[in-house]
Amino acid sequence: MNIYVLLKKTFDTEDKIVISDGQIEDDSAEFIINPYDEYAVEEAIVQRDKHGGNVTVVTIGDEDSEKQLRTALAMGADDAVLINTEDDLEEGDQFTTTKILEAFFEDKEVDLILAGNVAIDEASGQVGPRLAERLDIPFVTTIVDLEIDGKTAKIDKDIEGDVEKLEVDLPLLVTCQQGLNEPRYTSLPGIMKAKKKPLEELEIDDLDLDEDDVEAKTETVDIFLPPEKQAGRVLEGDVADQVKELVDLLKNEAKVL
Image (cartoon, rainbow, N blue to C red):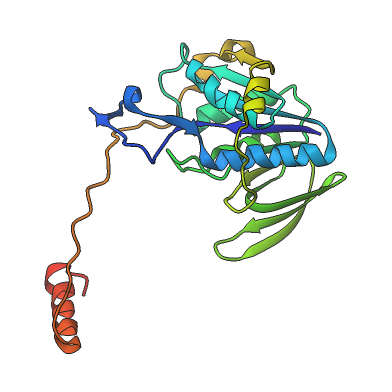
């Protein structure tokens, strides 16, 4: 099987993020593989081990994105591709990403493409479905189980507290939800092997694209942190007094009644 994983470098939201003049300060930020993409990498490796084939991880980014690709290789992926847009693009959006990936996959034989359900930095969930549409292949989002039998995939899809069962023909694109698997940790032997695995670097010129072809369709106006949560209030006294005070607060202070 020819299996591909779409990978994105994201900010580690468990670390402090500093914003200055409407921009995130990259120098103070820690970057990781988008957590939902880790489920995609793990599932790709599981399916390859079951059915044979090759796992290639693909990302669009800058030179620093090689770190996340090497991590995926250390997990067990076979090959990696970095589409470096650092010198060609200042801004991009989901259209930009989809357009570049469409050009990359134009001459590829694909059985399965996996991606994260969403990226934790923008959380649009658009790239996977948009790419499948451009490649004219079926897609299923938020999968929590995947079984492949020949050219048919049996899928459990998360639908907000319940599961929908589907059968879809390959080639196929899926986006991965928490609960699909438990991503493995990288081992020291895996890290050492990753240093010798192929990592190809491309630019948009190599894909017969220019800047006008991938110009963003949206504009980021501002980036800001959410306001700090105010301290809660504890109501005291007997229950009847607490209910009376709560109704008064909801009506006159919160103005939701």
